[in-house]
Image (tube, rainbow, N blue to C red; front, side, top):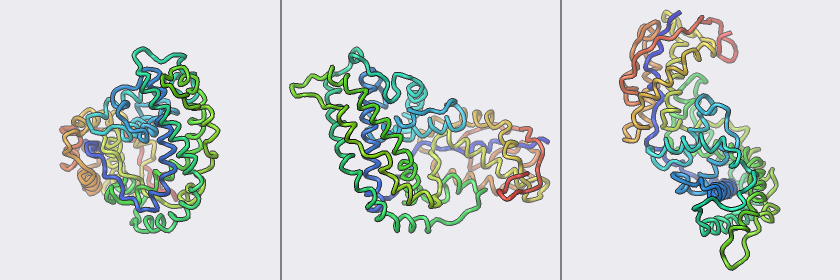
Length: 394
């Protein structure tokens, strides 16, 4: 059966203006502080390793330590395929963390794809006996000194996690209670488009994820402190003694120090943060929106559900076409989350006779995300009309 999956792919579109940072209540900021201290330490250690290898260039040279820590956490364990699926999501997340402007995203993505597969940059890998040619020894000294300060700051902050989690609990529950309920099939809700990007609830999911990652981050920091210590001693140029990075590893908190936060946040039903305004992320949303509409359209009969594997047929080609048509990573700032939501909702409202078996263009509101994307027909296989408890065809 031929089903027209059109330019709907343009649905998923926008990186240009990053969403405003969620307005954090004092309890949220206090609970985040130890996790931010850990990510900052990871970023400083990654900056030092890149510096020693002569690889700290471009956007990564200017990146603050905390977002660089997020980049490093992703790069430490990349997915096998960085062009598709979860691997591509890692690339988008790395760009979201580090790129300060839409124009910088392509360079950050290229850097991630290169650096994430280099064994010499993995946590605990042997450090160069001598810094790479052209490396500024003063920069190594400065980074080493910052690492010492940050490691001690983390050690001081970690014991306060339990109290912070207790203080956060009522605020977290209040924020979650304020989120309207939505159907699992609502693409706008699944992609964080039903609330303002600045809504405070969006600060909770990243905190939960960081708390879950804390143990691995601590292992990486421990490995890096010990591996980089000899290189710092060899490169040190100041009259004073260099920081003993290996000894600092013994000052790190326990790997489960963030457990109180994880225990609080894991049971909560948290909305997905707004999809990054980035073609690689948005074009996936567009596919999901078009597929979601097709699942409810078959001769105007509602509640017809396609097998989840069916909607994957042709997805890569259509998403690639959408990405190719997305203008300049939305650098002009002409798209935003409100526009993406309008696009998704317009697709959901499309009459079935404009969707099924036709090469109908995407809704006009989707045009900014992939101008002129040609309609496409895709073989979608058999339609299933038996709906299981999970809402999927059986």
